[in-house]
Length: 597
Image 1 (cartoon, rainbow, N blue to C red):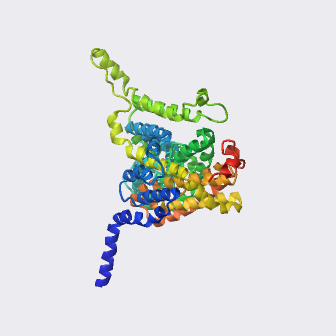
Image 2 (cartoon, one colour; image 1 turned 90 degrees about the horizontal axis):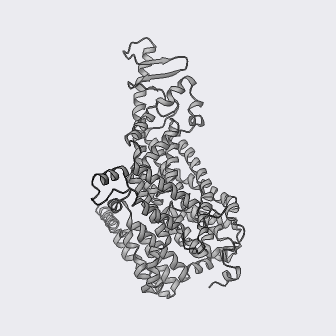
Image 3 (cartoon, rainbow, N blue to C red; image 1 turned 120 degrees about the vertical axis):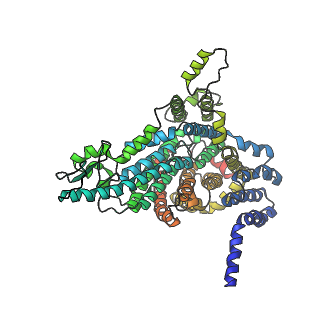
């Protein structure tokens, strides 16, 4: 017993000191790379060191992110000026504008108003409410970071499930009472009645609203056995999956897509990828995946029946008209939306700036016709300029122009200092400065170093032995390997390493680089099985309702379906949008590519 206790204590101490042990042992284990002496090996040393430190969080992520600033120059991988400049490149400022817009949306509660409005549009059954949350998460995460979207919607979903459980309990008690009344037993509740023609049990709630107490708020049949615990699992995973899918739909939704756009722009020029082309490629994939995820989570946790999707497919018409406007959940949502009050000027101004910015992104270079970027013949302007211009506008537009005018009219000699839509205090408290400039800058620096040092060329040459395989099989293997890697590693880290390797490999095989890069970036988001696979997964797992077994069971099927969809779309939509079967003009010529050291 003493021996067992000592062994247990030993391992508990090791676990407690795991951060310190990883911090010390990792450089020692990686030392052979430094002994090789080549630039590529030294670059690999820094790359692996940073990735392992990120994985185990041995120190704050932002502090780990500054390691390349001193290690690359010290090891002769890249000079200090080039390394430091990577931390403030064009894509960093581009995502800076996106983050600031998200801060303004959060300050004015615009995201909550949009979420509640979207959910209210759908029906009142449990399946359609779940779909409403997934649709809302999907749309909002296109423009906000998926972790923020998940954190914003989870409390609303939690309150909804609490309402469902409360009304299910009330419905059971009321139904038993009404059945007793129908048998001739007096209950003393004149507000309740049984409509025998329509077989619909109704009850007056006391506030002038009639509800169907047999299927209160959840739209489920008598055979359904979903508990509140399983309903919570479905809503949490649905929100997380949809946020992950939505983030991939635009070039501003998630870090791995931003890294891809920056890499393609730096290596091949702006003609390699446009905002419109990426949206046209990504959205059909993600819509199919979200729909499948909705059906799968319904079947797994709730009990899916296609008739439950539409209220009118399973309810008599006589009841449907009353129930459609009477469900207590809709009353709850309307009350929550009403509590936000009418849209304020600042909220409307933020929405207007947001919509204008989206339009500028879409029509910058739509490929189908000349965009507004073509007006600049010198090529000085990029979509980053539009993002930063939107930030400046938010700091100029008054939050309440009427109040500002009245203050000026009251005392014209007083300094005009009106409240802006966005202010310095909000930025200081809510803007993720560390994530913005250090972590993303570190990823860009590592990617540039892999390319400049020749590490990506060396790895691509080793992988060249696979060139005898059919290209579709290679695409499948790439997506499968990347998806598995992202289950345990961070998606941006994997994408950052794979981008230069796959571009070199495609050029050596004289294939369109997008043929490998686009499915790889999409597959990097298809990691649903573990809590550490993505930010949304971490957030929903932290709620305490999900077990690892639940996430693996739901995520495994999602992973398989996603891989099938991305491989199918690469050879259909990819051909139409990116012409992936032909070597593009913007890529290096065959001779130049093959002569690369």
